[in-house]
Length: 214
Image (tube, rainbow, N blue to C red; front, side):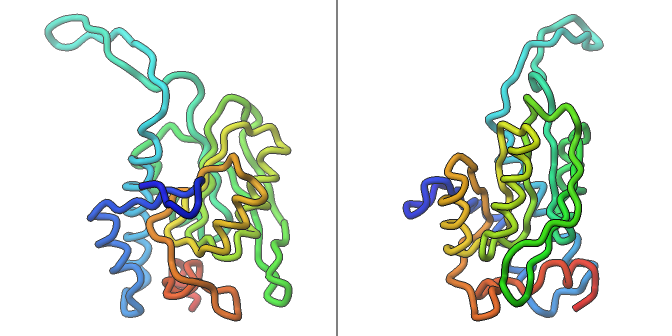
């Protein structure tokens, strides 16, 4: 549902998403289970996010007769995980949309300034007309997400959306201030950031928990 405070934010309150998110937050959850849960939640979120994709008619032959069905119109989705934590969301979505292209944006947050630093950028060359889904499990300060959206737009992307598992008000506000045309879809809007820029209550460092480096 749309959030009353942020016009560009939709918080998904589906029971399965909320159930899996609670398991994801638990500090006792193993790396294997954490990785599986991230993929499952991403798949459920993608189901909701793609419900407005345009359709076009297509003629198919069933075992009994010819009929007119429907298929997604135009160019397909491009998933753009912000390295490295965003990688955990890719496989879950591709199970639902196997034809999706995958780009990559390498950003890390400077621990002193909390500002994003670019180190890698690669997306499909025929990006115009495609729908880009930026994958960033934790929308904390919003700096990395905003930088990723800026880079995509400069490369010609016209339709960009952001998928996050957990967002902080400061991050949503920053993205709204810099990219008011970019919708944000999250499984939860948490309370605040701590002094180190981590979301509270959050789920810890998503990258460390995904790859077992915590």
